[in-house]
Image (cartoon, rainbow, N blue to C red; front, side):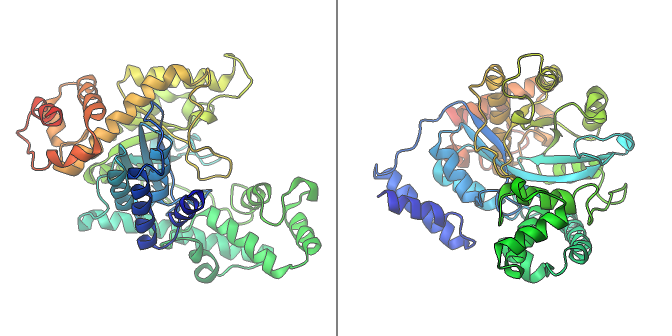
Length: 446
C-alpha cells in the first residue's frame, strides 16, 4: 500500500494534467476507504506556495500542494505563482475535492515611483518590489485584463532571452537554447531564472562528461573553490550559478528601471478588476524602503493594498534572543498591520531549495502570532469563496456597500472563513448586491 501511495503522489507532479487529476482521485478513494489517514485540521497555514507553473524547488504541482496541505492538516493553504495563472483552476478544483480551505493568486514585480531611490524588497533594485494579488477567483478574464496577463509573460520572456544571450557568451561552450533546453523544464512555458539555472547545470553535464572537467569549468567561471560546491547540480552550485550570472553584478544582469515593470498602482488596478486582494509583500524591514514602512504602507494602501504577506522564517535568526533585529522588525510590522486592520497572511514560498512546506509555528518567535496568521488565512479564504461564488468578496462593491470599516469587514470575513466548509460554497451561488451579511451567515449555518 505504501508503494501505491508513493506512486500516486509522484504522479501528482506529472506535467500531464489528466495524470495529476487521476492520481488525486485515486488518493481520495484511498482516504475514503480508510487506507490513507489524513492529519486532523489544525491551526497552521501556508498561504504562499509556488507551484511548478512558476518554480517549486520540489517540483510540486497545484494538485500536489493541495494534497499535502490536506494530508498534513493545514487549516488553509494558498498558491501564488509568478506572473501566471496557469495552475489556478487546478488548485481550486483540487482543494474542493479534498475539502481544503484555499485561495490562489499571483506574485509579480512592480515599480513604486514614490520609492524610486530606495530599495524595498528586491535587493539592489531601488523602486522595484515583489507584489501579490491574493484570492483571484478565476484564470479566465475579460480581454482588457488578458492583455495585462500577456504583458507579464512577455516581460519575463524578454528578460530571460536577454539573460541567456549574455550568459551564453560567458559560459561557452555551455550554451542554452531557450526553446529546446529551458521551456521543457516547465509545464506551460513559464520559465524563471531558477529554470534557466537548472538548464545551465544540465547542459554543463552534457558538455563535460568527466566530473573533473565539470568541476574545473564551474570553478573557473564562478571563481569558486571546488570544496564549496555540490556537483553536478547541488543546491550550493545552483545558487552560485544564479548569483554570479543572473543577479545584481552578474554577467547577464540588467538593472531594471521605471519602464521595466508595471507600477504598483497599475498592478493593483488589475488585481482588483480580477477580483483579488492587492497584497503588500514584506521582506524583513532592513532595507531603506522597508525602514520607512509607515510611508510604504500608506503609499501601497492609497493604490489599493488591503492585506500584507510575510515569509516568517526570514524574519528571525534561530538561536538569537529577542534582541534579534529581524525579530524586532517582525513584531513591529505585525503590530503596525494590525493597527491598520490589514489581514496578515504567511507562507514559505518553496521556490528555493531548503524552504519548508510549513513554517515552524511552534517556535517561540512565531507561536504568539498564530492567531493573527490564522485570522488572515480565514479572511482570504472567505474572500476567495464568496468572490468565486457571487462577486461578494473582500474587495467587491458588495463589501464596500455593507461594511463601514475594515475592522467590521475583517470580523465578517473571518467568521465566514471559520464556518464555511469548501463543500458548502455552492450554497452561496446566485447571491446579489442586495444580499446582507447576515443572510450569508444563515446560509452557511443551515
